Structures are given as C-alpha cells and as structure tokens.
Length: 97
Image 1 (cartoon, helix red, strand yellow):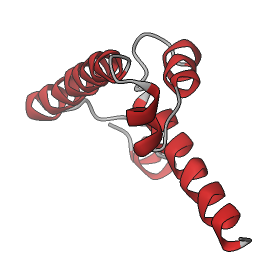
Image 2 (cartoon, helix red, strand yellow; image 1 turned 180 degrees about the horizontal axis):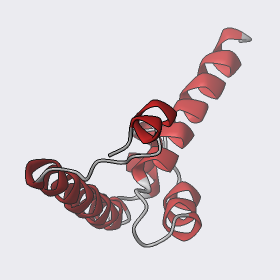
Image 3 (tube, one colour; image 1 turned 180 degrees about the vertical axis):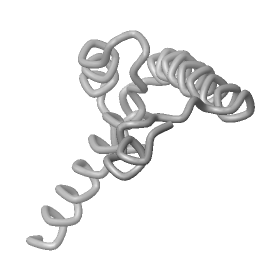
C-alpha cells in the first residue's frame, strides 16, 4: 500500500472473518426480530378493541403498522409511537376535565 493511499484514506482494508461473521449475524438477528414482531402483531389482532385500548392501540394502528412497513422492516416502532401518541393525548384530555 502506498503512503499517499494511507494518508488520503483511499485504502480500505478488508474486514476480518470475525467482523464479517458478526455483521452477518447482526443482519440475521435483525430480520429474525422483525419477523417475530410481525407474528406478535398478529397475536395482538386477536385481542378485542377494549383490550387494545388498554394498551393504547387501535385496530387501525395494527393494520397501519403492517401495511406501512416493508417485509423486512420492524413494524413495532410504529406501534410504540402510536401508543405514546395515544397516552399523550389521553393525559392532555384528562387534564382539561
């Protein structure tokens, strides 16, 4: 490797086997987590509307989480945001009473 390549940052050393395996494991774990969370959303669909309301969700939130995310994206972050929005709005509406 030339000195100019080192100083300019043009040389990109290849990753070690361990680093490549950790990167691959991280990707597999991410996909597995996303698929598991999709299955959990299916279980949430079995709850009635009152039970969903108790945890700060609606049936529309569940459907939107599944339809707005791609197959390998984790839809649980959408549900977390929806539940937090619901909690905030209920706090503000009860404070005005």
